[in-house]
Image 1: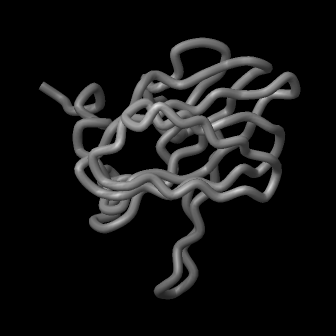
Image 2: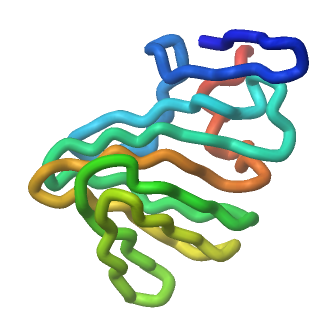
Length: 129
């Protein structure tokens, strides 16, 4: 999962990253950068959506930023009732407190990003005890 190079660490989504229960249908999500690895100020989640897949409704106390690696889809602003189309290379910025959903198009979607700083509520299922 991680390769350390002096003071730089490279993280890979290699299957050892923990799953996140944020996909409603058709896909998966994993935490690549998150507090469980010591990241205090940033999170990066890999969201893989099958054709017409979608996330659950998300909302964070801080802003979030995502990048569309592959595919097409939309970021639906549930709070404002607006839908923003996304294509490969698109970035989506989510304001704090905004309820939103990602929806994949006919060819699916690969998305990376997350709230900054991390939203601890996303990882409660990983806490031991």
